[in-house]
Length: 379
Image 1 (cartoon, rainbow, N blue to C red):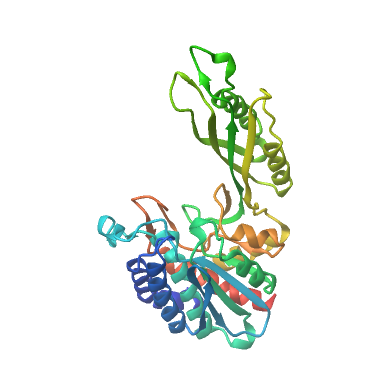
Image 2: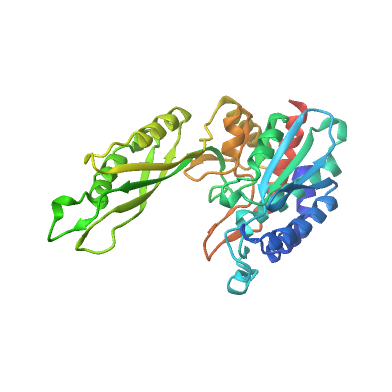
């Protein structure tokens, strides 16, 4: 067992207790009071792990938490979030429970275990690595990732530009693989404005928004190309009032995913360029690409290679993969800052009732990150 892994194993109980405390501090994205309570818990934990901490005001939303550890050889940014998709009270339906080595609870995998892994990694790094051999580390824990990172994106990007590498503590791919690529995400609302009329007495006087939007759905779906990782999904289609009324309005909500930055602008332009087949119908397009793709650049690949070297020191052959979901790592990677994602808990069920983290992986994840810190300091 390596010194870093041995140190992380000694902190296993500390890690699990930090996860429990964070999960018990339920923190849905839309509840500022709950988020502030969770931020207070996290702030205290950062100080326990040896950091200096500040709360970063975010206007009308809850504060973000910024923790810093000193170092002398470069700068690394840790990224996570403490908001969850679960409402206050969900813990009564999904109580914290250990079953077959798995810790269950709302937000335990996405991503309060990841925050505890980050803190344990730095606790270990501070104890084992001399300060003059490691990079300065900043942890940014945001309060709004699950709802689009609207209040935190500028802070995230500003910090990322001031650091040499970004490590993101979102959950691993089930089985433990790290994430070296993520799809970019676009959300669009396409609205058709037609002319209403009586469907029986005078159908020709009307221009159906529903009929026009149905034609546009076929155009939208044709933009997908799975060969290059581009998908288009019309998830909502609503319009009209009654079957005997030619519909005056209809709208569709469209989800777009792209694997390559080069595709993002083209898809955006194609959707904004939709033209009605019926000239009496007006189309309105709102939304856009809100998260760029995280592509597997040479910098990302180099970070993964360093992580794999660390894991091999205790005999683990670390894998990598891509995912269709997005994270704040999409933003940092798009800036050109080398970014490695999926360094958080290993488990399954994010946003689902069976959400859990596998406890035996926790020391290995913390040691992996501490080892990355050491290698970044010597790179």
